[in-house]
Amino acid sequence: MGKYILSLDQGTTSSRAIIFDHDGSIKAVAQKEFKQIFPQPGWVEHDAMEIWTSQASVAAEVILKARITGQDIAAIGITNQRETTIVWDKKTGKPIHNAIVWQDRRTASYCDELIKQGKEQLIKDKTGLRLDAYFSGTKIKWLLDNIPDARKKAENGELAFGTVDSWLAWNFSNGKLHITDVSNASRTLLFNIHNMQWDEELLSLFDIPASMLPEVKQSSEVYGYSEANLTPYRIPIAGIAGDQQAALFGQLCTQPGMIKNTYGTGCFMVLNTGDKPIPSKNNLLTTVAWQINGKTSYALEGSIFIGGAVVQWLRDGLGIIRHSADVEKLAATVPHSDGVYLVPAFAGLGAPYWNQHARGTMVGLTRGSSAAHIARAALDSIAFQTMDVLKAMEADAGMPISEIRVDGGATKNNLLMQFQADITHLRVVRPVITETTALGAAYLAGLAVGYWDSIETIAKQWQIDATFDAAMEPAESKRLCGEWKRAIRAAQAWTEEI
Image (tube, rainbow, N blue to C red; front, side):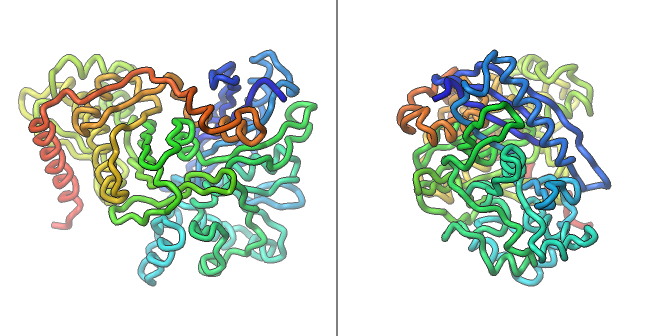
């Protein structure tokens, strides 16, 4: 048994590799950014070969950095940007086109057509998802319809589809593995989350041949081995989960009612709902969290499009701070936003509003409003949006939520974390290791090979860095939340025709 776990974290803007030891501590990290391709407005692509080569190179680099060999690694875990779609030739292993990224909107009008045809409820009932260009199914159809000979080759069984986890497993195993796990399969619009199988009715709706699809596996099991392309040693590939599900597991939210929020460019909140999928009445997604030892756990998920990105806008768009880290200092120079509210709907409003036509709106400005008040309002907006998703989750889940575990870059901001606790009246808990996505993949892989013997064992490793409890009077937080609702109404009013 090796001494370490290698976690591969393939994200939207960079590929990373982290080596974890038995205590769940980080021994070494390597990271490499790769190119974002924007062929036309609303289209986002990646070079799938660059995804593979960047991920393979950081994997090799991190082993060198840690001064170990392949023999010291007990297993490899993979976590990935979800929904991003790759189709490749099974014989040559070469992609037929660039990867179409989850952010890509090219199939939005096709989704609108299907909604007009009344297909949305059927899809939601089977998959737990909204009918949206975000997910993989419509992207596969676009590739088959638009790349010369693609449909013919697919019908002859010559093409393979995969999300990024499948693409990495295929390449690390030299084409021996064409697999995905249940968490990634559940984001394709093609997977029935009730019987845990690819759905024939949905495949025929999207006109996708079943022969293209990967075999669906559990999130924690030995799938196969990395061949000699990484080290001379064959290392078990033993854990796979999409990034938000991996973060939920890395935060050890393993019991129903436990919830995590990742504060990144956007914010992703995920609630463990246990062994039953809960259909959402409040515009959230129902999804598979993971499957371990034959037992499936489900989750509710809400996405906020603009989280930390609002701070980048203060820096690059307004120029009121030089570095993102300066925002806390600037915001702290005033006791509150003095009635200024910023709704950062730069890319529309996500959950629970789902208004794609909404745009950024600032209200409550007076002659006394300063850069500090705007910075404060920007930070507050991250917390208010999080609260909106949380309220939708509580309503859907019908289970009480007492604390929220947080991770991601913006959690270093104590001012934001305190305000989050104040307006939600929940305890906000920040762990010592905030690399929870990579850690979740490491845990899933380690459990499969017996590196850790149980979830209970790893739950003991989770350590608190800081907790934030509500210090604001309930009447004051109620007033602020009411004002936020008015600001949201103002942003939505702007979308109405005159």
